Image (cartoon, rainbow, N blue to C red; front, side):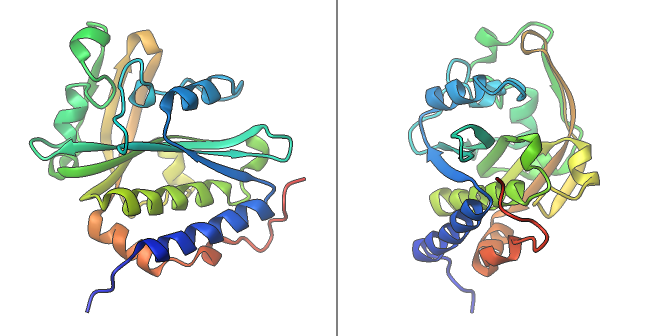
Length: 238
């Protein structure tokens, strides 16, 4: 018999992550106003510009179809961020959504530069359809790297997306170095996810597709115990 992951289970899991983050010297904030999110990320001196996917001036996100997570340190300075949104791809697939540039712009005919392009060579991207939770803009401040904060933020985001949307797929576009370092939390990875150029954004990428099926996400949330992410050698940040 398949177990059912309910809101109470997810709530308890999130509480564990929150407690672990506090032990690391981080307070976690979750929000839904992407104007606020952009104002937060724009003020981070060492973070690159937030992609238009999560900027309401280029790609508005309807209420209930997106959220963000921000971690602040004991000085109330931002130490980590991540954002997520839901795409309805019931009449298409993720490869088409990428290559049309609609992952990045609500209306590419208005906002995209004539030389903007996205090439998707990932065969799996064509199979990613239905309710698709897309995660991105993940950033951790240098002095907090290697302390498990990225894992905490990512697992909270996975649980949040499952609880809010129960998506058919959860996916992200990631740089190869995240796979080489083993810091990506997804089960599957494929090259050629997004060969991207957004001229006016100053963006040139060659990212891998990283994904989970909805059933794999459910199983991860069901069996997850927040204590698994504790790293014994890490001490709370000071």
